[in-house]
Length: 335
Image (tube, rainbow, N blue to C red; front, side):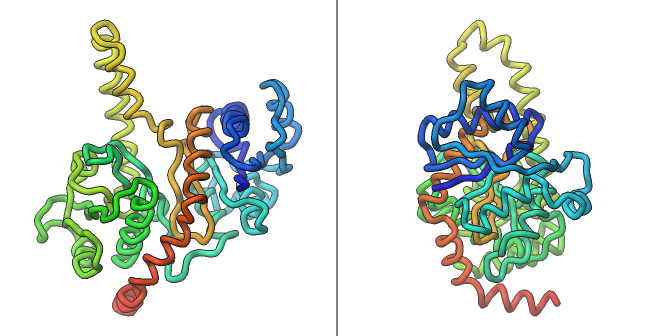
């Protein structure tokens, strides 16, 4: 298994990206890890951290997409951008998965340019693991920001892909799917959620109905689906609340029960999950938090390796195939 990593993406690149890759390489998580970026900078960082084991390679990419840049325009101007070159390794079968911690917009746009989407999928979505009070302690939210403007069939596809992913990764054979809305009642929501709920009720999935955003964490469902605008707001709000609560409780727990503080912090830390898969492409792309440190990067590499080992793409294709008739029918109704 070979995993290509955009070594120049993220707030602490290339230092932390290289460090995380070296941790995973030394643990033999993958047969080969390809660090894609400015060769001189990446190789200098490798040497400063003790050198590379024999399963690390560097692929030169002279350009970098800045976080503040307009993704599509920047990608057109910089064909040698590290994220593009990394994805090309995937398209050319030089890699089995790609990992990126830079601009999410650039990663999504570049994936749309380089990779083939799964049959029937128009809008891929980011599936992000979140802490939950469900049986597995982890819930899945998608879309978390790739597609802010959705149609009902997009939400159905997210539910199908999320169900397949959750089943394979977390071992829950019949994950509960919830549709994020402003209330649990069927009458609550906007036109998008009401139409999507009708599709989900007849999908054959384990649809439990509307859920409020608090239920994403409360364990009312395992897979929560929404458009990327709502999903990204949920994600960023959750990050802010976690930072606030950890700051408020840290001083008390540090003195009274430091082990409890460590346990809580670990469960809420995004670095434990590593990254979020971008579902809807024929090949695996994992998007990491822009602030990812070496632990987050190494965990994301491990998660990507597990997804490849479990043939995640094949399971998602099987799920989509069972719902193609409903998706086509809805596409006709929306056109």
